[in-house]
Image (cartoon, rainbow, N blue to C red; front, side, top):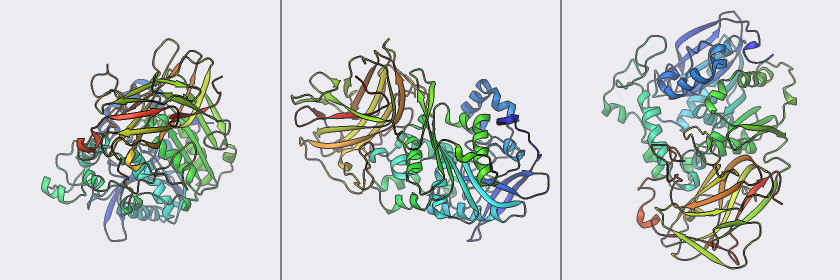
Length: 576
């Protein structure tokens, strides 16, 4: 029996603003949702800055509207009164014998202190909160982590720290590499995301902010009470998050302190990635699955709304089967679940079928290179014999390469790699790669992501001065860049680079066309208007990170002969 059809045997009570004391004496505030019936139950814990008391309708109104208009099955499962962004709905968990604990991180919401998200200090607090939850009289001593995005990304760090009582993790769309996934894709500062996220998602809920627009679900007062701090006091009580990232251009000790030691994660893990995480979570969620040391680990790669998918009854049933096995010790056959399940998308953003296997990429993947020809702007099966080049200005659309109409139906699933020969008129070069697909009718295949309603098939980014690879972590299908030094370009000199393109999947019928766009700026459709032009607000356009003197010159793509620029694709069926 799955979803809400499974019988709930417990009623819920809430303990509001419970004090959770840290090792340094600081007190964080938590809401504890637990069964009224006496007993000891496993705990699902979240800790973060978005506000344990902020209802989804206030924090993300558009997500609440989509839920109400298109997902009656979620509304049927719960009153949604306690629905908080990116965290589990306690109503659907407590009834099945779980306790849900939501903690405001230090400096956020009801928890006073220094606001320092994604930091070693916050991870230490998280560690302490897990230990606290594991020894409460209502706790069974087993703690699991469940959440999306921010509330998933932190799970990798905490699991690698191995706090007592932590028994299983379930990161649902959570970046694992702070540098490569969250703030510096390909080495470029993710300015569009960071400069929007920091004030909107974090600072509005800073503890003591009297201008906070959010009202407590239960009492209607602002969620940042009881303190009342002036703007100057607020600024003095937090880090400069964007400034810190700009100050650290390379993957140094500052970033390493914010990324896990994957080999130290040995807990059971159910990892769920979503193609809608293009530009933030997708790559790192899968990377986390691959690199953790857990023997008992599973990966699901999905499509659709990452947040609303998380709340669907079928997804909750999947989550509960996993936690029933590892937090309650129920022998429910979970071990028979496919180790890897990958959704294959259609051109109209549906799932054609789910493919299962034992590894990522899938064992049946057949890697095939197609080659760039600058003379004809084509993608061809054979490498051109004649050398050619194609130049574009940074402010222009870029260089566009297209296949002829496909001669047969194909399926793609996995990461891709652009292996390129490039040169620049200046001492550096930011490469933006975009994969697009078109049906036989010429209509582009577009996809809904977390922040863009018409996203392309996939994207990739690389700062060419940071082209150096880490040979220990690189594979033929996923280059891993060290990002530990800058190797300036000599203007006009040709360099070989490998550009990682984030995972994709699509089934394309005969007559379709695949297109690769290489540009010096974020992808935008020429006819797009408003904020959604193809990359949403996941932009890389900060002049402090990309000064024109260094990045503003013409770029050139070299192909053919000694410059066999190519695109490696993950075919499940090869083009004949």
